[in-house]
Amino acid sequence: MQTQQDFSFALKAYHENSDICFIVVGVWRDKNRLIYYNGDLTNRVASVDADTWRKDSLAEVVSAGEYLLNIKFDEETVERIIDNSAESVSLLQEACFKICERERVVETQAQNKTVGRGVDVPALMREIVNNQSGRYSAFITNFAEGFQQTEYDMYRWLIFVVLSVDAEDLQSGIRRNVFSKLIKEKHSSGEKLNEGNITQALQSSASLQVTKNVRPIIIDYDQTTRVLNVVDRSFLIWLSMQNRAELIQELGIA
Image 1: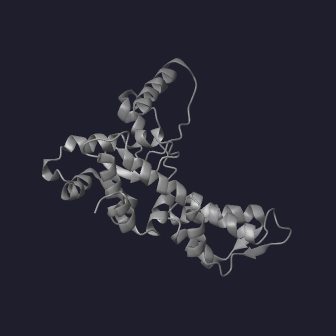
Image 2: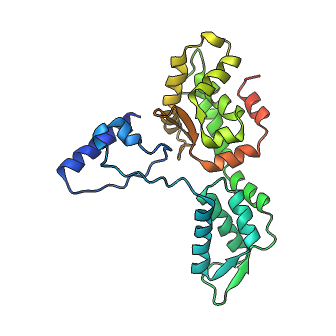
Image 3: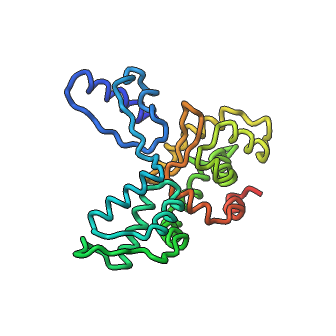
């Protein structure tokens, strides 16, 4: 958070004293993160959400690859990949890459070739996501440990909520009041738990992941909207394939 704030002021200084333009690539979900830290950047920053991919946009990515390789993906397979990709362009691209790899399409074809017929798409997506299983398991464990052991173990409880809410809430983002409700229902301190402890932990969630060498980060809290978002879409698919009750039990929360 402090780094982002410092960076927002540095951008303002460059804007006023040079002709340099910057393209800033960030993993936050909110469009106005830098403006939030420095209001002087209002109308001087144009935000482009590169993480929102509609079905038609994902289909365009496939079409562009087909043109370059002179191939045609089976239409049913493409539709199923898009439906199972959690709107993640990286998952889509990896699935298409693996299909090409299996059918030995490694360069532009001399004659147009159809690929991907009869592919077991759910199995393919599981294979892709499971390659990061160790990373996601380590993320849950390391995040739950927090910066250090504390009286309330708030980071353990934050990840408990992430593992507890349904898929729709995970995809759209978990609101601040949802964390408060679910944590107080299970935490030993109950309603006496200080709201500030929950808020402070949410605000430090990105910093904790950086400290734990989780790169790129998996979740991020937007202080403006008070919503925690999953910024790594592959995590959503991986989590849908796990036994969440077992993951929660491993946290030491009954």
